[in-house]
Structure formats: structure tokens, C-alpha cells
Length: 164
Image (cartoon, rainbow, N blue to C red; front, top):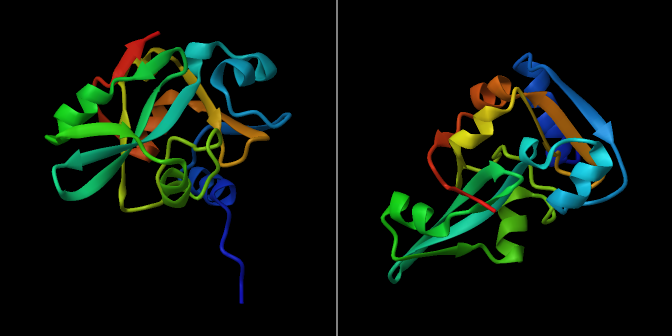
């Protein structure tokens, strides 16, 4: 029986298949945006921070979204709640976020390989020609052209960031 590909390997395969302009960088394990930016040598706002958000609809089952914002921003939970017409929104519990993404917190890339996880991206990300993000592992990052990220991830582009 073949082992399923890790999210890191699935992501690299997707980017290669889509002819993305990207490079993988190895570094010490780190998932916090400000710290990893110093290690990688990128501007904090160039990083894409990816956070799983849970949207509640009263007593109905919640929905989940992968919120992507620049590294110097916070996720606007109210904007996401309003976008989905929910009654409440919050960061998804760690276990649920890791189950939906197949990644430990801090290593979640801005791409979804799960139909239950819609990808959202704030338009502020587009202020960068090149973006960088953790690539399904705490010790690997991917630098890629911003245009390729939007072309391949196909996120719903909505205002969900608050400048910190």
C-alpha cells in the first residue's frame, strides 16, 4: 500500500503541474510569522498568514474557511462571519484545523486540498510581487510569484485583513 503524499509534496506537485514560478527554502523549524520572516529574510507583509476559521450558523453544522492575509495583518473574524452570513466566527480549534489541512499549526500553506475548506485571500496580498509562506512543514517555505498564487489557489478575494 502506498503512503499518501504529504501536503508539502502535494503542494510542490501542484505548483510544478501548473508551471508556477516558485522556489522551496529549507530553514529551522518555525511557524510564527514575525520570527520566520527574520529567518527567511523576507518582509513580514510579504508573508501569507493562513488561518482556519470556523463560521457558525446557529445550531447548524459550522463551515470552515482558510483565511489568507498578509503577515503584518490580523484576520477580521467579523468580516468573515458577515461574508458567510453566519451568526459567529472564530479560529477553528487546533485539532479541527490540523485535520482539515493535514498540517500542524504554523505550517499551513495558503492552498486547500480539502473540499470542506474554502480559500479566502485579502486583496492586500496583491501588493507584493512575490509572496512567501510555510509549505506544509515548519522547516520549509515557498517563495512564489503572487500572480501564480492567485492563479493556482483560486481564492475568493475579499477584504478580511486588519492591519496590525
